[in-house]
Image (cartoon, rainbow, N blue to C red; front, top):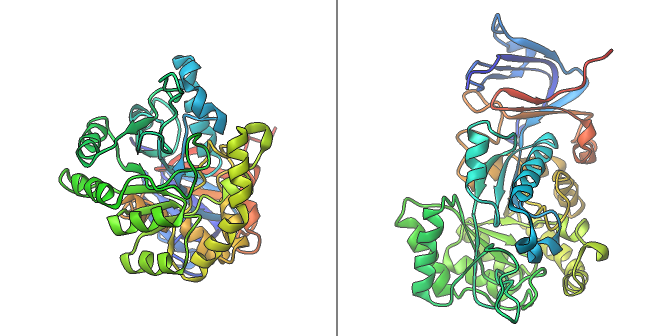
Length: 411
């Protein structure tokens, strides 16, 4: 879709590559919504004659952020087991509202790992709704009685089809085909139990290593897709890594051996620290969920700090829906609190996320020829990463060259 060329002047530029910031920078975009220049003002080419010029002096320009683990169709943890009671029309409209709120909080691309149909991706692409550029897993694959199973004792699925239940290698292969048929950009499988599921524990194993290998193999037979493993306990983390997954989600039980294997294989870790720092709310949670979260909280912080120290490939993910939506960039502060530098946290939320999603040729960094997805924030996040956590301080959000958020005009 054609857009008005933009020129941002006076910027402090953090381009997402990890390079040092540029103190006096200019960013140019073209009518296709792509970046044509991002660098020092002294070397900037002339702006397009019809460009909209935005003076962002005193503010920082960064790439649009990428949240690699969200659940837009869920507002709070207890809702997962109550989806059957939701009015479908309201569910669609509320999901669209959460997506728009997340975009305005600075997330221009997101990966939904269960519960959101592929139609929402198409709706964003066609301009029917405003939200992050979307990849979706559609449903979550898991065993009977495991993390993806919200069936009651009388046989009723309270999640309204959020799970894709498999119990054999053959069923696993067929389920991958169903998910691909239904538009999945990524296959999400459960290698362990979880916090929010009623029938299991985080240390319980989910899909076996053989079943995980089957998922990876079947995906490769159909053009390839990332495979994301919900994996919290150590045994399931190791099964997921040995099975060949692209990313380990949560990874709360990660130890040195698992770090060694993840580093050797080049697997991504998506820690979802917001569920530990921001997601423990007794009033919002079922009692079994609250108890598990409290029990695992400190262990999680120690183990993810180890992964950061070991230099694993870490991508930003929040598990929003389990924790509040549109507060995604608080995750950056949580990474910093466990030892990551502010610059590395920004890279985790931009370039590394793009690499995980297979979009590094289009988003994640502000470089010539890439999509003009960017945010402008008051202040310097390298001095105080918390400025990005306050959506009121995110003054502009641009997505593919289109201004989605801007300060209200002065009266």
